[in-house]
Image (cartoon, rainbow, N blue to C red; front, side, top):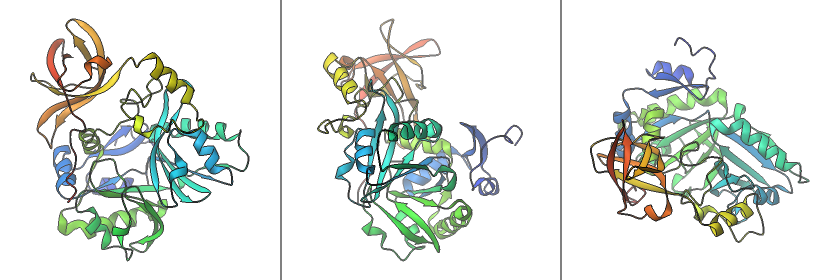
Length: 371
């Protein structure tokens, strides 16, 4: 634990120690990278269920008569299409089209929204949101991050485990919908059918002082099915197989949703939003790079920031790469010129000074069976 004293801790820190979590510095937070092992925890989520502490994520409430108009200007997706209880994935953009952050927008009521933002971007995002709000009347933006704990229960058995702790019919909560005021183990929670693993599952928001009791209740309820706590290592490998972007790797201030292959989340038919003109300029000028999924043909693992080569020329870079535990293949994501992004295109990835052959493949790498 030496060196971790000054790090921020979630309400579940003692629970991680009790469970044998290996604590690391994750962007200023003391969080578990693993408990029993990354591969074991990864397979547990794919085959049964895993429980994650994601209380380091940021949460913001937006409310008021001008809330919808404000959010329509703030994010690129069309929030007006959401019914109360519905959620959408969206991007906040800079005027030039680069990404401030990717996030989830929950519509809790006609004039009340709940936004989940990336932990590393919380301070920056909140400042950006509050600055934009100055131009809107009847809008209030509240940072709820310190007053909110978040647990993620993910995997094919997640619904059956959670159902034991609530009288609510979870089958009525559809994918990318939520229900607030739901009692789980006797505790009031906001429950959404969302996740960052590519599996079915739920993200559960609760008051920080109730988080340890909820954590223990979930583990107890799921023990017969083999539910176990899961750390950051498997969280990354799971999202990678599902090709869910990670801010700072697939997305950043210089990269727009267009280059990242996320244009389906951009509502160009909206009259205007921050970054719309920048996106249109990029599209008209022709994109300079596109995100591609690839498999290593030669033996080797592509890692973030490794160079992508065409012959001896550097043409792109790896954003994420690793051995895929589910597919048993060395896979990667990276940016290359658009003409090299087609499935079957070949290039080399520089690994320890040696160019290793890679081939573009379809994404996502993993897609769960929807039985």
